[in-house]
Amino acid sequence: MEIISNLFNHSIEEIAKTIYDNRILLSIISMHWIMFMSPIVITLLSSDLSILILVSLFLYSILTINLIFHDCPLTLIEERCLGGTMIDTVGARMDTEYNNENRGSITIQWLFMAIATTNAKIFLVLMKHCFFTYLSE
Image (cartoon, rainbow, N blue to C red):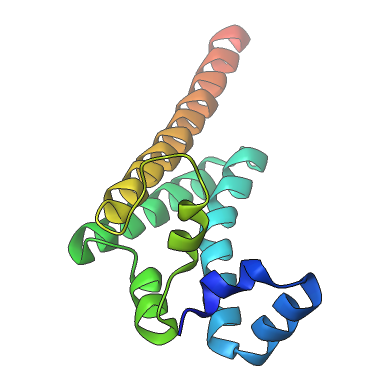
């Protein structure tokens, strides 16, 4: 039941109908995008230190869960319920060396990059605050 890999062979209307008819597919894709895009958007648009720290803690919690399960829990649910994963389908069409065995390590690499970006932004906000405090004295 390779629902996800078969989506690329259809038109946009058929893809939308398949996603709409399969509620599990719609909810898992939505959850993946929310978990992927929200830390990126918040990190880029926010300069509030407490929000950036919360985003960093959220990313650390996702990293911890990925280390415990050796893969993303949403991807494991997707594989069990749908017979394939969105990440595998997209990764198969890329030029990188991607397969099911290294999916967990690639996810951890992306999480480390997101954590590094968020922590760099926290550091820059702290440096900005210290710099302006130093100039005002």
